[in-house]
Length: 199
Image 1 (tube, rainbow, N blue to C red):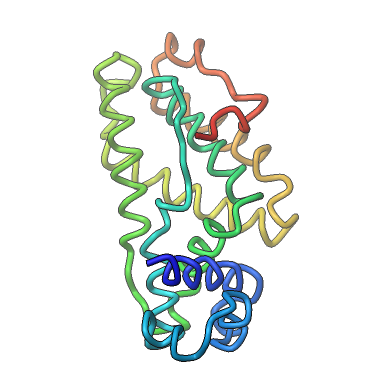
Image 2: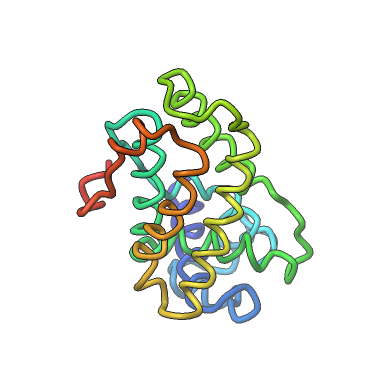
């Protein structure tokens, strides 16, 4: 099992650095320091490796924010920005989600997992009276995942994600008035140090 995990993490690093097209089995084998037999025992192709990295997207992040409701959702969005800046495994899975057409993929599972995560936090916010009456939690979770995905891609192209936290501030500055009660908005803060949110 340890060899499989070593290969998976080496593949994620290579996919992050080179993208799907630029990655090769030989580069991954060299990074993982495994033989061809060891590689093919666990993964039959570069495509199967890419699919495995993509399937483990949420496993690559460990968020343990203590806030609740909307504040926890806001904190999570900043934590993910930090992870995109610093966590090669998470970055690779996100890159592959965007590039999956290159290996014949049309799987929105990674996106749907984040929709479910965000929706659960929005349900909690609803119970706490933080959402406006006309907000549909599922609809907003979908909008938020789409907006976040586009913002991080734009930030990556523009600055290598250096400005991603600032872009997330802008996103929330416009989205919160559309979904949160004035009382909830008054209590929301943007974390100055997202490192503290790491598990």
